[in-house]
Length: 118
Image 1 (spheres, rainbow, N blue to C red):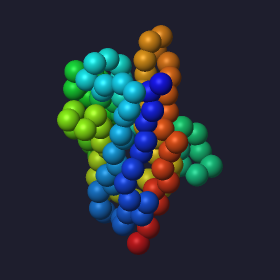
Image 2: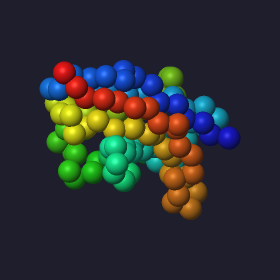
Image 3: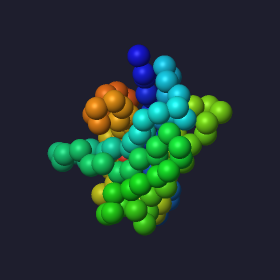
Image 4: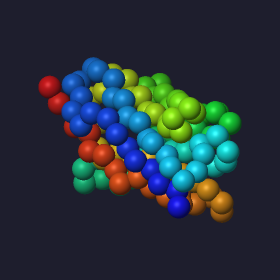
């Protein structure tokens, strides 16, 4: 029932900020659960980036914390990712996903390809 959709630019230049938005339907990001950003670089595995909980609290992967910010717009039922000072190594498919009952990633967006290149 819950659906997530990533959106944002597909090309970002090095040193710029990568900004993506996840639009949620079928559930409220303020009511329950944990709303996550995950990425998959080409040829590599999934990497959890961070999360914003229903109460607005955030947590980040230690390797990305200094470069990452997750926020939300409750009026639009959206949460967003900002990745600062990107490099080509940040090229990946970016997903938003929700951890619901049972601690599982119950629903995922389809993913959006972001390329960091000059």
